[in-house]
Length: 295
Image 1 (cartoon, rainbow, N blue to C red):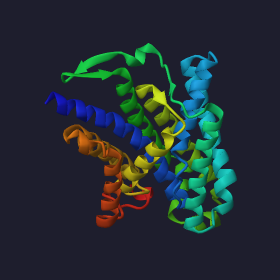
Image 2: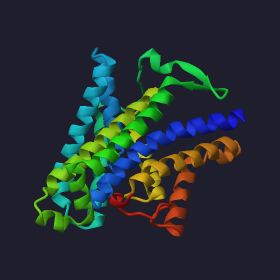
Image 3: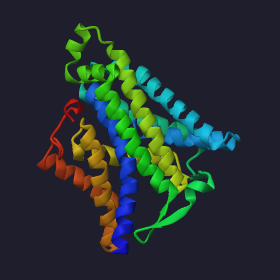
Image 4: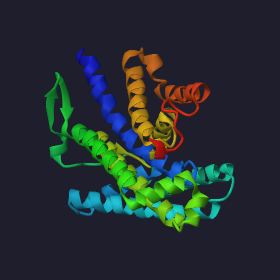
């Protein structure tokens, strides 16, 4: 029972990271109708920014805020430079462009910082542990889950209760009609990238803070798994993104925890098998929604 509880807590911790990134995927997809495969690299940018700032002697709390701001600026820059010119191009062009941006950012980071693993040393407070249901849990685990819950609620409130959120729902529902009533689609898309960048930055910082080690390729696989989580829940659904993140983590953690070592080593392969099965059996995802305006 203790092992089961430990696995479940690990899944909640990892699922929180997937959920944050998956929400960003879903928001951008709903607004633009494209899959931003460079979204995972925003996690890397946030983590390296925090690492550089802390090495420069900037206090942790202030460094976190600055790292999030830097990540948001990168997100806005990517949208304006790489995605806006191809907004009306075909899906294949958009996918290839987002993959190119992802590869470029990863290679640029490698050229600047090299590919060796770096260590992110966070304040000792976050490493403190306590017992919960007989399992050792760290403060960073609680913070990770709490941040996911709070940020998810904030995003939902923004979308459901604010004028910007109403405009986002209008653009997601009918972009042409939104243009006719005077909604600035460029502004709304920028807001979508800001929200997604903030969520990705927080996810990257929390992930690296927990596992302490990171490198220039950290964002790609995390981004891919979060994308699979978004597809699993229903790409474009906020509810599905969160649920898909936790379901994906539960499947992944229990797969590696309960199966023999030789089989468990194919953990990453398993995540892609899940994607294929979902696309074959229920292509709209478990929640069957393709737009978060109905979530």
